Image (cartoon, rainbow, N blue to C red; front, side):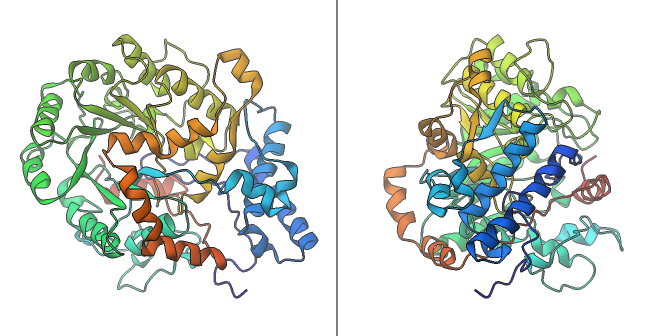
Length: 489
């Protein structure tokens, strides 16, 4: 097989790295993660020799992904982290059929948080000369085009890699294209550019695979008025807002006058989904607005609207354990806010997993607590699948890890968490989002099965060549550069 990318097999199919989505400072890997990577690469070499393959060929197989997850299990168990694990048969590390029995799922996958940037947009002209918003250490696999100046590496985050990584190199069926916090002048991706990419996907034989958010911050001059034009010109699936963000660093609460005005405008425009960034705080300024304290209050006040809590309030620096009603941030604050409002299972509050699950993949105890708490308190119908790709490259590794993840019997007994069944996974992966975004799956499924993207995906499986790259900032310096370039105060 003549493969282009990573011919020596140095990249793992389940990415263990410190990558951020640009909204939080990267968290360095711990020794347990470095040991997991070492074991995974060692095992890949040994398994490839036994199967008569080169290491790259082994790693792009399902057995390669299974072998990596099993190496993570061993490393985490050695470190005493056994609250969650990747439930795979041992033979899956060598036998493709055994690996496929877990990792080749057939769930409908609706990813409600995707991103890319326009690498030649107006925002790049405001980046100071000589400054690279992201200094990729390894971009050989993203086929960056040679643009004038020093920003050619941003092609890794552009529309072509986005379509390839999301729809060709992963099992994702539908995605919502979301936005990052910024002034309108500094947007790395405008709604017009997003719509143009959605149109590209549409032209791949008429199926509607890509949905659009529209960014609005009611504490920014002009944003409330702009909602009318956005809804009139584009097919808006939800309005996206950042309560911690403001032109001068001052955030707002959803039940403030500005927040309620935004919700009322969305209701009048017939858009009943409000997507809110909560958690992943940008810093100490206006930190209280990054928490979920206002979520239950506004959800109870506006029962006809859906509140999609992006990142579920997760805070990387604080971790997640058993539910603590005294905690004033993190996933616990989301749960407390919903409980205080008297909202239970099946409410109009939804917890989204973008970046949260990607970070939790490397911490099985925190992953078990987070998923377990959300299932117990919000319910299995109120969790939405999101990956924050393409910051993390193709979301296929996140999908495979979720397919295999299980809460340990010990944690299930001690904390009352449920077992993660195929039925629960199917709801999280896409069935819940189909209801929230009002997509008729009975109509959609046969169309998707026969469109050009499906054919290209199947053709690619005959000679797989995924990059296994992640593109977001991996160091504090890269993170600060990206924040400065995107106008985050």
